[in-house]
Image (tube, rainbow, N blue to C red):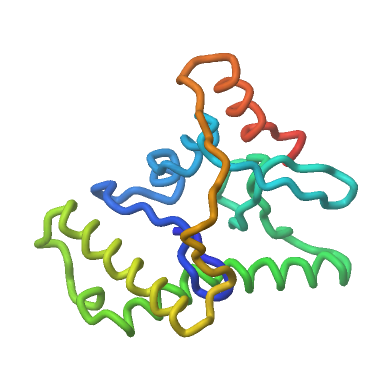
Length: 178
């Protein structure tokens, strides 16, 4: 899941069966497929004099060095890096905190679910997430508000295997940018 500090859930992916780790789930999620296919909007920003085309995700050390991942320092040796590590790790806890709120809000998420079909679990989770985000918005606690009149630019996308697809994939997997 991808959540922000206001507990708004921006993306969630449920369904891979078995004991999948974060990397396997990430590979099956649509987050990066949308980037590769050119279906996601660019979120340009600049940090330390480097211009980045896409947004970023805070991760821990197990994730691969992708250009969109920001990991904390393993062993920070100066006050600036220590402060960054603490802030980054604090922000990463937003997802766990968000799921804690979901479990307190929706009793169905606190009981064992092994007997449910995967599709049913997906529907339950997505329903709880949608209702959760609606409550945040209704209470005025969301970072941004839904604007039904807002028109986003049309994102055409590209076909798998095309040159643009390969460029998008190469940019995300660029270890030098990371």
